Amino acid sequence: MKTLNDVRLLFLRPFMQYLRNPMFIFVNLATPIMYLVLFMPLLKNLSGPGLRSSDIVQIFLPGIIALLFASAGLFSVFPTIFDLNKGLIERLRVTPASRFALLIGPILMWNAWTLISSAVIVAISVAFGFHVHLFGLLLFALLLVMLLTIFAAWATAMAILMKGDIQSISGVVTGLNLPILLLAGVMLPLTLAPSWMRTLAHFDPLYYAVEAGRDLAAGQVSTHGVALAFAVLVPLTCFVLWWATRVYREAVS
Amino acid sequence: MSDIVIKTKALRKSFGAKNKTVTAVEGVDLQVAAGEIFGFLGPNGAGKTTTLRMLTTLLSIDGGQAEVAGYDVRKKPAEVRKHVGYVSQLGGADDEATGLEDLLLQGQLYGMSRDAARTRASQLIVALQLREFADRKIGTYSGGQKRRLNVASGIMHKPTVLFLDEPTTGLDPQNRANLWEQVRKLRDEGTTIFLTTHYLEEADALSDRLAIMDNGKIVAEGTPHELKAQISGDAVTIKPKPNKLPLESISKYVASQPFVRKSRIEDGAIRLYVDDGAKALPMIFALLDDKKISLDTVAVSQPSLDDVFLMQTGRSLRDTSNGGIH
Image (cartoon, rainbow over all chains, first blue to last red; front, side):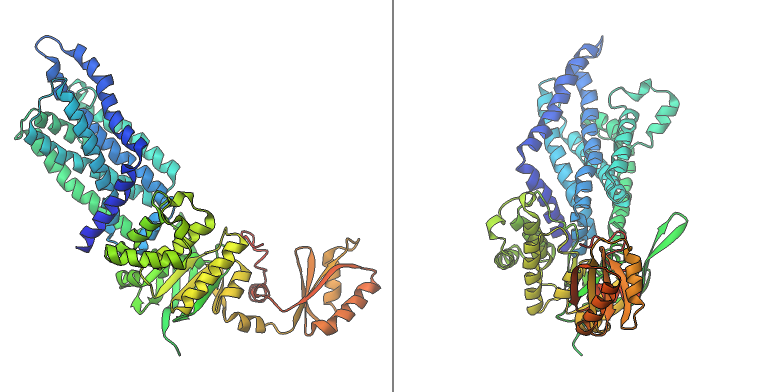
């Protein structure tokens, strides 16, 4: 019970702060809309014989949304670095607050905001011919939350282990962002890739979410891709959360 | 003897750096009684903060024992956390929150209900004079305002022991005096306070008892009065007018006299330790007159904590390379 209450408090702290920051809300909603405005027109011209533009939206939208979640997870490390360097995390670590709550509170906050902006994208995409399969999208949302959690918890633990050194951490995070994105076939499908790249893609959590997302967006729930995504992301989420909580507990920062 | 709330025995901590380990704390034995202000004085890098971080469960303990508020720090860290408050050098306030929000969060993380936290926060807002800005974002606070909020945050849950790490670093004299007042008031209300400082004046004026730390070890412990009494006699500080003789040779010359126990150079002046300042002065004047050395200033004073530090370590706390003592 104490843990749940701690999670609630540590989720609400940053959530309410962003809620009263008009600039943040504007960017949070404008970025996904920008993706659509600057991306959808390109897709329209891609449609060839036998492939209508609505099919293409169906294929690319899950990729874009998964990308939003992965990036939000990785870049959530920056506010954490500031909190570390201001001594805020140390202050919280001296309280009896649950270590798991210290970790997961902000991560849930990023999940909440990214779900909100994704809902806006989906709503707008309907106008571009995106067909909503509600159950599929809900399962997809579950995968996306795990995806963001994996990246965010990993990045948070790295930030603590690197003692809030912003230069090293931003190097690692921004350096990894591009390969994670490209290996997942978000922009261009991996069917175009050589086999070594397709093998490498299996080490990228985003890859599983994108593959499953395309099936789920099409309303196909019981596919190999969906099963594989859950089989990989569920244990990986548990493992990363366990490890990052341990880092919080034993940190020397 | 009154209750002991902090007790350590042979406390040790080292940090691994590539091929060598650096021992930051090397066998610290401490006893802090309930309701006292215990000062921890030493130059930067002496191991004060490391000791404090071990006692507040932030750092693992490599060796020895530590007990805080009746709980073994290694075995019952969760219990220790419930009973201690901690204000780090950085403060750790949430710049995006208002002062009131920050206090409410702190209280609730200690398991207080929202109402209880609100009641306690309003008490502290009055006690620590936060009222004018409690509803403003912390990012807009001045150094002194932020420090008072940090202290309020550290005592939201009425801890048995409050740990303050360099609480007045960066504060102007007025804010420093104000914080000292607050700390004394807390002590009078029964909170035990453990504070680190590298300011001699602060350790002297504020601590009921203090320990002097250097290179990971405690080199002296006692009340400020007891420590200074170890150095009997007086200190005479003379500052010669610019002269062809270097300070070192003047210092050596005066120190060779039987009535001078010891001399050293500090901030362009010579500090002499004598049994009786009043008797020594005319003799010092006569000596310098012989050599045609005239003086800018002369002062007779009681020994300071710096003199205690010097006696124990052979160095002055004012001279220690990275110590910011002014």
